[in-house]
Length: 58
Image (tube, rainbow, N blue to C red; front, top):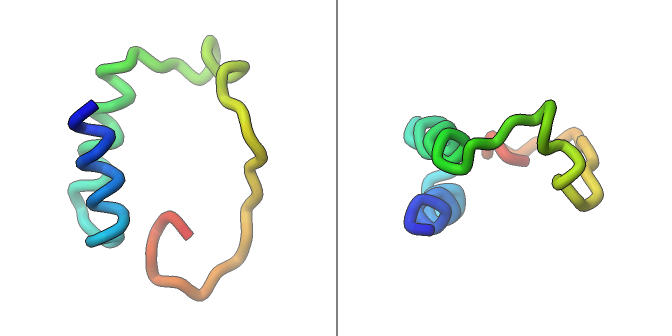
């Protein structure tokens, strides 16, 4: 759970940090996620929007 909190804090405080990718990749490894087998577990509405924000997650 610490890594999830670290990632959220980093996204809010330093959205352009190079550490975001490292933490996200470690979370994928730690949770043994595989898109091909776990994609049905992803729930929600995903929408791609054009944005003028400099943050990589906008």
